[in-house]
Amino acid sequence: MKFRSLAVAAVAALSLTALAACGSSGDKNDASSGPKTIDVWLMKGSVSDDFLKRFTDDFAAKHTDVKLNVQIQEWNGIGPKIIGALASKDAPDVIEVGNTQVAQYSASGGVRDLSDKKSDLQGDDWIEGLAGPGNYEGKQYGVPYYAANRVVVYRKDLFAAAGIKTPPKTREEWLAATAKLNTGGNQGIYLPGQNFYVLSGFIWDEGGDLAVKDGDNWKGALETPEALKGMEFYKQIQALGKGPKDSDEAKPTQTDVFAQGKVAQMIAVPGAAELIAQANPALKDKLGFFPIPGKTADKPGAVFTGGSDLIVPEASDAPDAAYTFIKELAGEKWQVDLAKSMKYVPNRKALASQVTGDEGTSAMAAGAANGKATPNSPNWAAVEAKNPIKEYQTKVLTGGDPAAAAQAADAIITEALNSGK
Image (cartoon, rainbow, N blue to C red; front, top):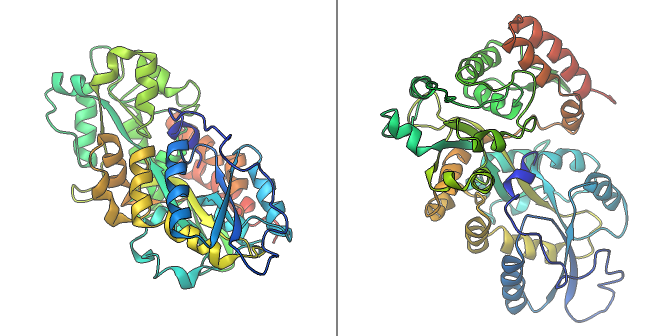
């Protein structure tokens, strides 16, 4: 989702020459016999050419009654395109959508309810950060496809020099280790003041949330005691470095700051390590990963889960064939292959053990077990467009009253989430 461009930044651009041209295949299933053709929209960067060829070749061999027309879509401008498709009579049969977008599309009434497929797909084992957003008003519209989440990227050499033999597993251990590292011209951690996804995890750990449902309406929840505790921890850890208090991870780009060689830790998806190494090859073999620590050692910290779900439009004229495609792509064989190929987190918790060969992916999968998503409202995008949470963070980090700042942000969140009612 919001950090998807970073998660796939090191992935080579997809070659589209082997794929069918974008656009509907027209009256694809009017014939009374022969295989059904289904149009599938996958997003650019979610799969590699090699993976897609392996999958489509295998699918064609196993399902001779279904013909795939896979089309790669750009993220830029995809929202209006999907909304238009869902309102049409000639929609694609399967669409990959960002996990936090499922509620918005489902609210339109143009998405098929797949609740009866959940058991067949072993949905009780789905990671919550994908399954939760895919469920809107008690119905499962989105089938988890793949996930990615933030971990701590750290300098192994600086940890060793500070006498830190193993990565911290609790918040207290993390604060103590970071304080040790924040010396001699080095930053213990580079954490910009407005990384509200990281803040979300700290709030969830305390039992709070960014917003909560209040009857038929929503209300901002930053002023709750739980959310304020999450912000207090953010302030503590953020102070152990020189991250700006009034900007996010993109201003300046935090991988560039880390590459300068004076930062011991940062919070990012594992793919950030490749960008750091590109900017400073001397750091390539010095980087490691661990899950964001939780309040207790038995459970990693909560993290925002980005990623995608698969939906079937109501207008699909081949819903059974569409489900056949989803069952294959969301099934164990291809979930493990995709995770290993693209360094993603599989859609089921039980599959995490199958990606332990890569340190970054393994740390990410461990954190994903405690992954969550932003409030499941069709209007959440309106909140992020205004983003009062970032302004709230800056106010607190620069000495403002936390409760007053939270109250002001909550008012904006509440208004945005209830607009149009």
